[in-house]
View 1 (cartoon, rainbow, N blue to C red):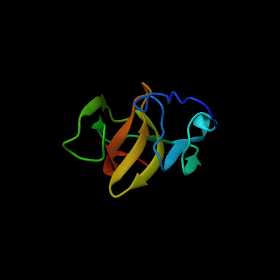
View 2 (cartoon, rainbow, N blue to C red):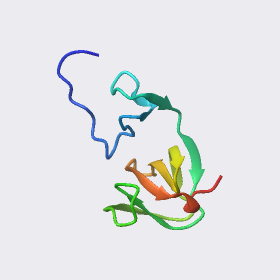
View 3 (cartoon, one colour):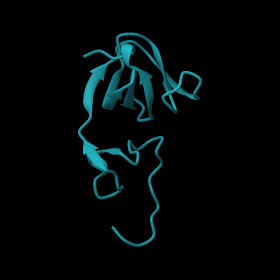
Length: 96
């Protein structure tokens, strides 16, 4: 990619420097790309801006809601919820 970059909003487009949704290949640069895994929440949980319990709450997810998960590590799942907002959820709230 070359030229002026106008990256998409990371709150509604799943990408970080190290990982991005394959749907964004060609639009963003990341070290790796992944297909989201569809998971359902087993408990109500906040979708947070960062992987920190004190982080800003973006939205509240309900048990049964779908999470399109791209990463799960260190007790956190990263992906996007039903409304398309991207963030972190405690891994114990995410089903297999």
